[in-house]
Image (cartoon, rainbow, N blue to C red; front, side, top):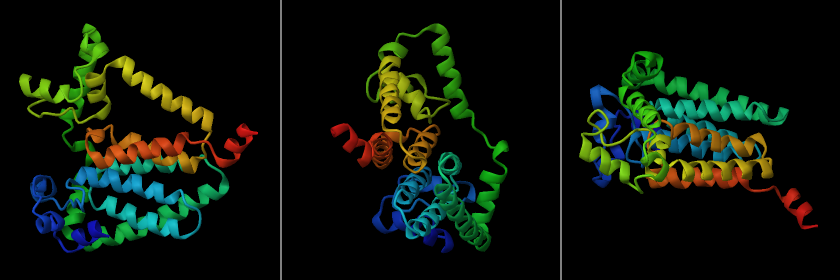
Length: 271
């Protein structure tokens, strides 16, 4: 609700102004944008967090979760974060693989979200302009930082760099980029998977992914339980999400949800 209020009142930095935490305000207002951050400090983080939270809400049965889902996703939409929209799409696609009831639930929730989102975007000219620039004209946007990260990773594979196997250590990529001039001048790769590969090394990353996949196979979660993980895994492809505490917490919550056996299966195993 705060994100929507910030957008409608044309005060994208309302919360940060109230508490004096203005470190990332330029990301909300850069180029005249109207990107809200709610209580998350950064519009990119806010969008990702709200989308993940929305799918966690939808795990609950009943009609109310669908209404709350629509409100929370609208909050994600007004952050004008493309990664949040892609995370939303990933979660919805997983939901559509579920049973008829789950498909009906997500279709209804998305329909309500589309109506609310359209109204908000239409009523706020600055948000409308930001949405058109960042989303509707997304192919024209400059993505050189993320593309350069992938190019650098590809080059490391080609050279068989030892750091890909042994890692640089936690936070090692930030130190490395600071010492070498950065990723096109920036101190991040803007891709959690690239950062994790460099910080932890291939064996560790593949082991973690393997354990998560094994847990999912054993748990056989429904689409409703798997959708939050799909959303979170998609969003962190576009920024170093796990280094933001709130995203890290939400991501591992979605992993727990996707890998936890249902009560019926747990009971069957116990017997």
